[in-house]
Length: 372
Image 1 (tube, one colour):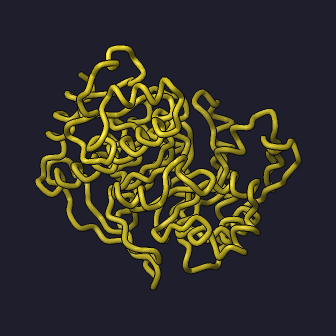
Image 2 (cartoon, rainbow, N blue to C red):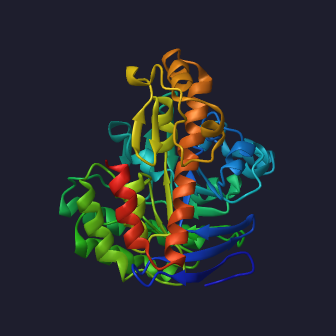
């Protein structure tokens, strides 16, 4: 369903793979999908400026409701004029509901059908979030795309507990939908169901009445083997509504992105590129490079000859190794620039392969080099 602020259209379908290119129109600009969204958990992609993110073709950022609620507080963000103005970002923003962060607290939270009581990981102070409260927080933050409050279960959760989480997620979705009134924010329901095919399909059916502008798939990439994730995506692939984008939450490794796009996924996010950058690891067209290793001490070649980012244009592996081993902030910044550009460049290459009806061939060629 479209309104004056949001609409989605499919531009091209790959004859070889069935994958698609689409455009999601939002109040802060168009997003060409498939797209990778860098994660700015606390209103910033760690160490990078908005200008640098634009330079590497970042179309949309993800930020985190849980963290912004705890610090600085959604009231501060609202007084600043919303998150776009607060962080000086004029392109689209998606906020997750914070549900994953709350449920990952395990021994610090208590779940009921009404909501979740939890202790702040910062201060230990008690907080209580209901679906309505979560919608209010995201409304105050002012993001373009918001997530319904859901219960995420981890790999290994029993069928009984997974079913209970599906039912609770559906109940909370209805409450989120009834509370949410802002037409300038697109609310995405989240499909749960753990690794049980019937529960996934049941969750999808429970989401369908509330799918207006997009749908998300949660509870994957939570410790399971990758083939299990692909199995669940296969279960959902042909059942997802075609007139909205499909968002796979928390997934960002190149192999999983490629397998996801082939399985009808349009949007991805992950902290992976910046997290491994801070640990001294780079994604390159010939595979991962652990730059702190001694083999790069006198390697004066560029990090990735196929990359057009600022880092690869200006610095050598030897210099990057020196920065990382000296614990210099610039090292993490330069590798973060490169890793995010690597993924935005991958998305560009994927779209080109879709246009040429050869995505399956591209996937095989890419992974052969990347996994070499």
